[in-house]
Length: 116
Image (cartoon, rainbow, N blue to C red):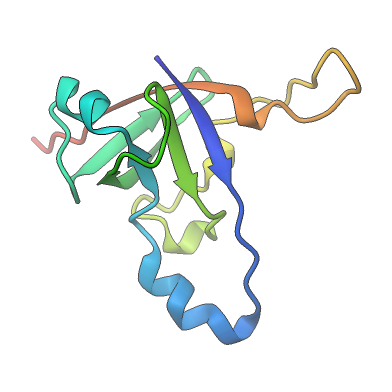
C-alpha cells in the first residue's frame, strides 16, 4: 500500500499547450516500488483506493520517497487517459484536528493496466 502525494501546479491559460503535453506522465513511483509491481517507465497503470480507481502513465524516478505515489498536477478530467480526475481516489473525510482535507494521505495501490 502506498500513500498518495498530490502535487498541485498552477498554470495560466498561456501554458495550456505545455500542460496538455504533460498529461499522462503524472504517476511518479520510486524504482524499487515500480520493480516490485512489474511497472516500467511509460506503462499505463491503475491507481486505486477504497473510493475508486484511475488510470495514469507511470514515471519511474527516485524523486518520490519509497512507499509514496506522487501525482504531478491536478489535470482536468478530459485530459486523463480514462476521463477520471484524482478526486475519484480521495475521500470526503476531514482531519480530526482542524477539519481540513485528507487527500494528501490517501492510501492507494498501483498495478499495471492489463488489457484482455
